[in-house]
Length: 329
Image (tube, rainbow, N blue to C red):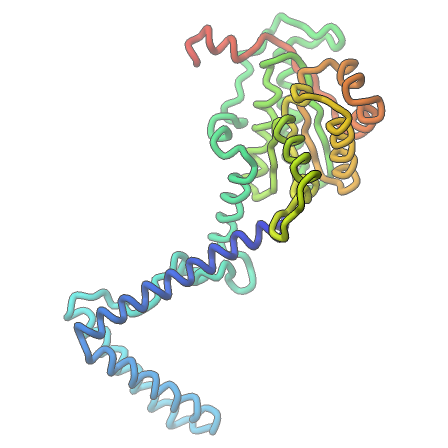
């Protein structure tokens, strides 16, 4: 996934900060070493002079002179290493100490993103997803079917709660596996505490590991954010709603718990409609029944969701309450 401009700028500003820090630290080490061992400063100046002569000789085609100058520079380098060791310094004391030696704190190696850049991408996306801490516990590795009854059944499908959960789990896995192949959306519904949010977190965790841009909002926070950008002046550095509309995956959790009004209804339609147009994936979870959802957000909104989202209903007893009775396990 290509980072949005403001995200790329955040990472590159960090590289700029690192470069400045490395240069500052190098200058401090040079001052210390030159004071303690003045000959090191002389060597530094001699190497600079020889390098300038070497450049002129190359331009003039004087190959023999160039070779002699190389030998002189090598001899000075050896003298510097000897002086550094004998005075208690490491041999690289007068060299830049990069945060990442591979890319020398540029973020790129041979025109490709360095591993440190990719790590920065993932860390940034985790932080901006609003999910950094919760995903340490809520992911596919920690998803358990033990919380779902193998006797309670969904009358419409005939499947037990556990069978329903397994089907939803498989769907979530496929959602991740096929994420880069096609645009897809999920609508998770069911009563409180049956694992809708947990399942969306599982998907988010996997996609964030591969540096996809995932944003999580409770319904209340999403509409609060949309209201702020709708009714306030946008600054040059504020990405506004673009990052909501253009992120790889948007998760809207607990839809129906916010105070619903005409603004909320219209913003929900605009958000899901725009993301469908941009072929960006969205996951919505709600405790509302389908008929109540339609009445709350309009037939038009429900029709748009029904025709573009895979609907998954989870059933069962409230897992949070089950955990309380089991001592938080």
